[in-house]
Image (tube, rainbow, N blue to C red; front, side, top):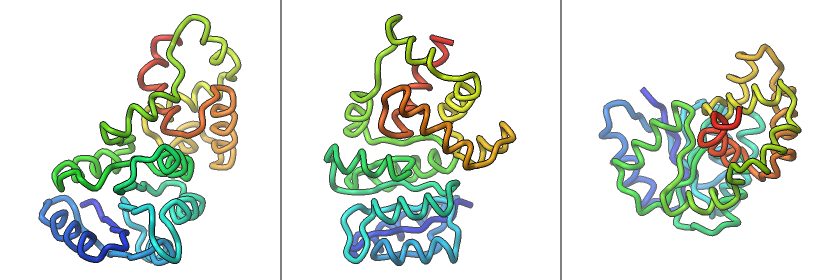
Amino acid sequence: MIRLLVVDDQDIFRQGLATLLATEVDLKVVAQASNGRSAIALTEQLQPDVILMDIQMPICDGVTATREICQRYPWMRILVLTTFDDDEYIGQSLQAGAKGYLLKRKSSEEMAVAIRAVNRGYAQLSPEIAPKVFAQIKPVHSENTKYLDTLSPRELEVLQLVGQGKNNREIANTLHLSIGTVKNHITQILSKLEMRDRIAVALWAQENLRAVL
């Protein structure tokens, strides 16, 4: 059973979505929140598996809440659900630690599929959002292998695991490292590959790493 926290300041939308998702046999909405501050408190209290997070909310917005939750609980999986497909919101959300970005106009069935995928550790992007992320990813050409050449063997191992959808805790356990060390490696990977967020790195690795290693 996947335990969900639904966060949105629009009561009718939030309650309706919670009701629709509750019809899925493997999903359970354990709580709802109307702002980021409540979401942070409920996350600490309930430790849900997946959080559906709105962006624009009073008191505390979704980007701020996502960043704070991911700093406290690096293993937490957050799926941003919003009406906005603005590049800035996308980048801020993914940099804050969100594992996906979906638009609210998706059907509840599509959202359920995305929730299951995020719960398994895979990144999820709406088709309207994906091109904006892929536009930031360097294509693989021979002249671009120099970026991989700058990575250490350990950074390459971390990069492969990021591409597999592993979170920081899972990478740390696999490679017998501390979470802090994993975070440092990912920071270095982002810098060396000249990418701004983790999902861009994960998608690049999924699409291209096997071709160049």
